[in-house]
Structures are given as structure tokens and as C-alpha cells.
Image 1 (tube, each protein chain N blue to C red):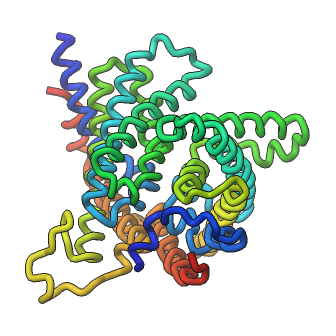
Image 2: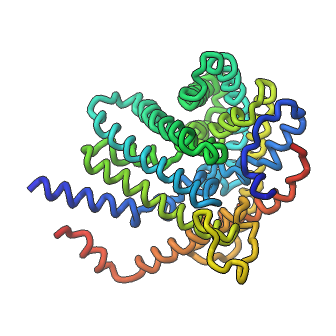
Image 3: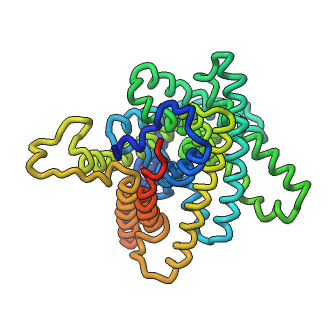
Length: 220
Length: 207
């Protein structure tokens, strides 16, 4: 009885974090790095990998330690846990992708202050068992990554005419360098459009009758 | 060229202090070109007064912690060969401890200031602009004096951006905006336009 419930709970948590409560759309959190690394898709992918790893591992660790952490110092412990996992990411990227590390290096360190990781640890992992926490972290990380990759696709496609560094087909025919897209202002504009679209979509959903919501709330 | 502007440039140890100050505050504005401190930038930029308070607090903390971090990194971690692995932990601890200390001191010395700044201080620990300034300082290979100037410039640049933004948003209350675009959406578009203006500063400081 308990096992399927936990499983359903974990899947729901994954979906919630991935879409319904997506941190970038709904809460506009953790966008510092979203903007900085999205002018090339390869950089974005590495950054997202690092973020998913850090979120999942932090959630697992915080969840496993939740009974042993004194209330007063738990923020400090969480920060140190995050820092340890981020250092692993930093060293791994430096070792395997030194060229990319030169560009995104400081932003990898800044994963520590990404509000999403701290937010998930505080809001979920601190009071839930390990497995749901794992899925919660995975959902949050992947939801964030999906938005970042979409932004990067637009910016790299329009700015460089490439996808993952590969030139788009017949780009001489139609493409002209849209430099603003790879510069900082382009990041703000594309993210603003994403937030606009997501909010408009959510508002349209909420305006519709709440039947669909009720049906979803009752687990099979 | 434009793309290169985003890439943290390698060592330029002989760069002048005035150049560092202006490039940190304007051409390399930590918010508008490096995207750091966006969360509190979007949350606290509704009123000029609040924005100014947070901006001052961030400038002060960034200046002090970047300096402290530069001293500890250059003279303790780097000679021990621990710069690679421990610098993140060191920076985070220094910033958290400094903010905590500052809060205690301000509470003792001036209760008025404490109530004015009180709500902003916890926000600062998670402001990535401050950690970012420390990390960029290492990346740019600044020495201790240069780091002090860089920290001040970065903080002042952040304050400039948030105060400008708050001024625009106060006016924006009177205009009609599509409901889905209200709040963060329109704020991001305005930030983009501000960033466009700041791109105009590039080339003013020769790196």
C-alpha cells in the first residue's frame, strides 16, 4: 500500500517541478546563470548538467541528514553541502572541457547561489524521504534545463546561425548575423518572451473551468 | 568582438585603477552584462527608496568581502596550493560571516539604520553578485588593491542599475501592460533595453 503511494508521489513531484511549478516560469528564480551561459548550446548543456547533478545530490544529502541537522545551523550546512557538489562539477568541467571552462568558469561556481537548489532543499528535501527528494531535485533541475536549452536554441540559432556549433542548413540563403542575440540584451529579451508566454498560458488555464485540475488532483 | 566582450579576459595585472573602477561599474556592469544579482534586482526594484537602501548595502558588502576574499585567497589559499578546490567554500563562508557580523554591529551601533537596512541584510547573503565579484576578481587575476577597487566598482554599478530600474518602474505603474507581461516580464524587457544602453559604454575603457 505504502510503496505505490510513494511511487505516485515521486512521479507527481517530478512532473510538478518539471512543468507546473517550473522555477523559471512561475517564480522567476535562478535566472542569473540562465542568462549568462545561454549564447551557446554546448555551454548551456554543461551548465545544466552541473545544475541537475548539484540539485539532485543536494536534495538526497539534505534529505538523508534531515533528522541529524540542528535547526539553527541547517542553512549553513546546506550551503556547504551545495558547495561540495559544485566543486566536483567545477573540477570535472575544468578537466574535461578546459576551453569551455575558461568562458563559463565563474558561473559554474555561482551554481552555489542559484536559488533553485537552496529552495528545493529548504522547501522539500528537509522534510521528505530520500526517494521523493531525488525526484523533486531531478524535476527541478530538468525543468530549469529545458527552459535554458530553449533560450539557448533561440540565441545561438539567431546569433550565430548554428545549433550545437553546427551550421544550420543553407544558412547563407536566409540567415544574417543577429549580433544582439548573443550579447547580454538578447538574453533579457528572449527570457522576457518566455516568461510572457508561460504566464499567458497559465492564466488561460486558470480562467478555464477548474474541472481538469480536480481530475488531476485525484490519484488513480 | 562582441562575443569576446562576454568572455572573462585573462590576466591584465598592469591595468590602471581608474580603468578598473569604470570598467567594473559601466562597461562590465555586473548586473547588465554579467547577469548577477537578478533575483533581488527583480524583487526589490519597485520603489526608489528601497532600491537605494539595498544598493548601498550591496555596495558596502561587495567592497569589503571582495577585499577580504582577495587577501585570504592571495596570501593563504594560493600559497598553500588550495586555490582550486577550496576557494568556493572560503568565499561563501567569508560572505555569510561578514553579513552576520555586519548585522550585529549595525544593531548595536544604530538601531535606526538597523531597521532601515534590516530586511536587506539576509537578502545579501544569497545575492550572487557578491560571490560573483569575488570569483571574477580571481579570474581577472587582480591583486589586493585592484580587488578592492573592483569590488567597489561592481557594487556601485549594481546600485546604479537597480536605482535606475526602480525609477522606471515607479513610472510604469501608470501605464497599461498586458496582464501576462506584468511584473517580471516587463521588468526583463526594460532590463534588456537598459543593457542595450550600457553596451554603448563598451570601448570607453581600453582593456
